[in-house]
Length: 188
Image (tube, rainbow, N blue to C red; front, side):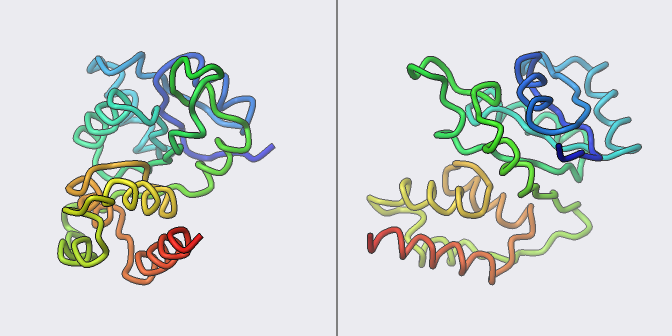
C-alpha cells in the first residue's frame, strides 16, 4: 500500500475510511464546510510540519472548503476526484467516500500545488481559453469538463479554470497536451 507523507484533509469520517482503504495516510476531517478555527489551526500546523493535501468532494461544499483552507493556509497541495468517480451507487450522493480505491490512488498521484503570491505570473492567458473554445461558446462547459479531467483540476467555470491553471502553474506545454486530448475526444 502506498504511503503518503502529507496529511490529507477530508470532509468527514467516511472519507477518512475511503482514504485508509486505498493508501497509508493520516487525515484531518473538516466536519463539513463550517470549519472551526481550531481545525484550521490544526491544518496550518500540519502544513508547516508535514505538508497537506486537500482532498474534498467534487461538489459546491467541497469547493467552499478548499477555498477556506487555501485562504487560511497558502501554498496547499490539492487532489481532485472526477465527479463521475465519486457518485454513489444509485446516484444517491457524490463524495470521496463513494470513490473506488483506484480512483482515489489516481487522484492522489496527480496532486497539484498552489503557487504563492510571490510566484505570481500568468502562464495561461484568458485569450488562450477563448481561442480554445473554453469560454463563451455553446460547447464550452463540456470542453472545460474534459480539460479539467485531463489536467486533474476538477470541473470549474471559465473564471475558475483560468485561476486554477495559473494558481497551479500549469505550463503552456501541459495546456497544449490537454487541448490535444480534447481534440481527440471530439474526433471520436
